[in-house]
Amino acid sequence: MAAGSDARRTTLRENAVSAAKNAAVATKWLVIGAGTAALALLCVLALILVAALCLVGVGVFLLAPVLSAIRWLADLERRRLAAIGTPVPSPYGRIPTEWRETWRFLRSDPGPRRDIAWLCIHATFGLVLGLLPLELLSNAVEELSVPLWWQLAPPGGATILGGLVPVDSWTDARWAIVTGLGWTILWFVLPPLLLRAQVAPGIRLLSPHPDVDLSERVAELTATRAAALDAHTVELRRIERALHDGAQNRLVTVAVLTGAARQALARNPATADPLLERAQQSAEVALAELRSVVRSILPPVLESEGLPGALSALAAQCPVETRVDTQVSPRCPVAVEAIAYYAVAEALTNVTRHSGAQRADVQVQRHGDTLVVEVRDDGSGGAAVGPGSGLAGIRGRVEAHDGTLQVDSPAGGPTTVTAVIPCG
Figure 1 (spheres, rainbow, N blue to C red):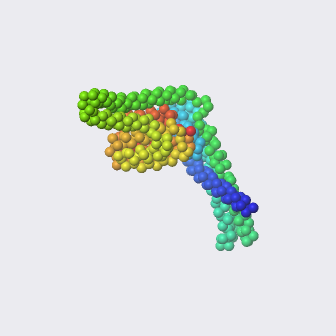
Figure 2 (spheres, rainbow, N blue to C red):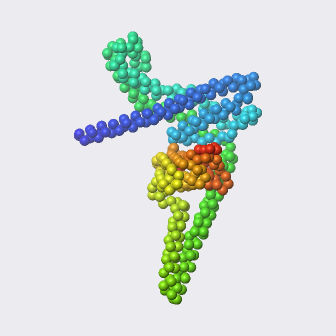
Figure 3 (cartoon, rainbow, N blue to C red):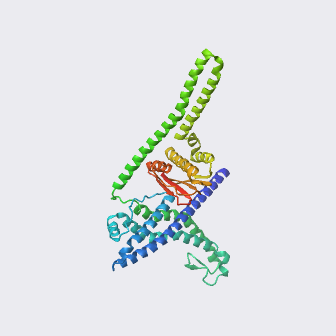
């Protein structure tokens, strides 16, 4: 009986801790959502002002800036949704700057209209939902602490039930503990539900419209398929050159030296030993080069230790001081890990050869179904994705997996290479 009672208490305690964590996480995202809702409210006011100015012909020149602000805020919400675990793509095209083209774009493209619809809902409904958990917490803390201070408060200063009932006696103060526990239970239960309600309009309206033209997406997939084939061909050529110029030449040398040693054994056995020693050395070098080629295809440490171990080994071999920070739980598919490993390896090679950097930082994080790889160095900058460059090779591999690559490298540095790879 005692053991069963202890087990039940342990289970209840674990459930309470889990509920508190879920409520705290949901509260955090709701409050962040309230912040974006406040910005959305400002955008709604600006949109109303521009609409009023359009009646006198002036507002049309402000359409592009307002739509850009709305697009920026919608993308901010998409990043929040991705961090929560529900990524929403943004398939819409560039906003024109000329007012006639902007007006046609607003009428023909469903994206801006869906963004505006989400903006109005989020600025009102989302703002209220984002502030509710704070109200619940505030009421819980206030009413649980009423017995400690109600006698010090002025008449009517201590209340319960959200300010509806004044506390004038110890009986009321004891009831405050009950109502405070009620607010606490509501805070444990409601935030996850409120968060689902707050993000629902964004998931529905910020995602691509069902009737959106898929030609752009088809063209993008065609380009990424071509990039994948090109990357595959380049990799095969690299392996062929490595085998032809390295291991194959070494093996030819082994064959020649072995034949010469056999002839020396027949004529003068004393001269055969140096030839056999050279043949053995060439065979060992050929074996090392073969191992190097195999490791470059898919490093064994990547399979055994995962991406954190492989990147740590890569950083240890880099001549530039490199710090690695990886957060990739759960583990990504092997193909994604190989792309991330190649991207970091090529980026660190560029850092070593071209940047003149003293330090590099590698950060790899998984956010839901997206893997973000960032390599930053304090070098001279000026890096660009040019034909035949290492960065172009990274872009080809990343885009072949439907990812994106961004290079930020102003003159004078620093340089930041960021790859975003789907890993769902």
